Image (tube, rainbow, N blue to C red; front, side, top):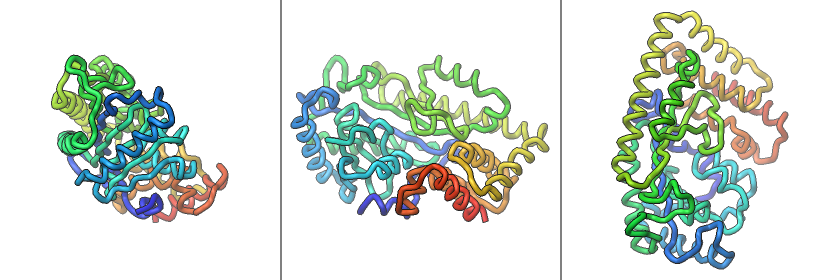
Length: 348
């Protein structure tokens, strides 16, 4: 299995299936873990970081969940390949930087990935399509249990699992849902709603997590702390707030259909027409227009397309994916031309 194999398959969050998949694009759980008696990644020396890589690689080979997983050292990848993996939500933008002594482990279905020597020695991630947080937690808990048979994790009876960032101390669990909320954005409600969510102890981030913008009306909701709360409580709290957002977005979509049908149809139709006819288009505009089209598909305004096709276009039109498909580096103008061609081809 190689990085190039991922280009010819769907990544997990693209499937467009699972509970409430019309609004919840994906669910994710992530555990932060560190090897006992080894300094955190930012403090460890080169030998210690190399030792962590070797210990984790050996432990992964013993883990039944990761039996056929790809283990790749980031220093052996090109910059485009690293960005490609970020675009597929398999690792963070931060992990793609300073690639020495870092690795990524990915299972063949792209459901499980592990960043090695990011901020923590291990960042274990499980992602599924739709609202499936409980299932993600169940799976990541089993992986954590298996890995702990081969690796001794830094743990304090008082504080819980020890991590580089204090907000991850305790369970080390960060859960999140990625939601498509165009109706709340179109009607101007999203600002107050996100402020209220932040007051409830949740982080709101963009498409690619921390430090990124909410492109295409896509938002990630995650817990702020993991100490003094059980893993089940983390999952329950995120699910509760996510269900409230689903209800609000769904009600707003229905209101738009009944009270502003012409305006909604016009917005969707203009987006569809622009993408079908554009000869050159940048990434941000593409994502914004795809958001409107996805809403149109979910509401039955566009009938000759399914949600999965739109989800794929969110990914295939990203810069690294365009260059991987072409097998060469492209400048910004070349990417904008190629992006328009791919969108027109798929929308046929």
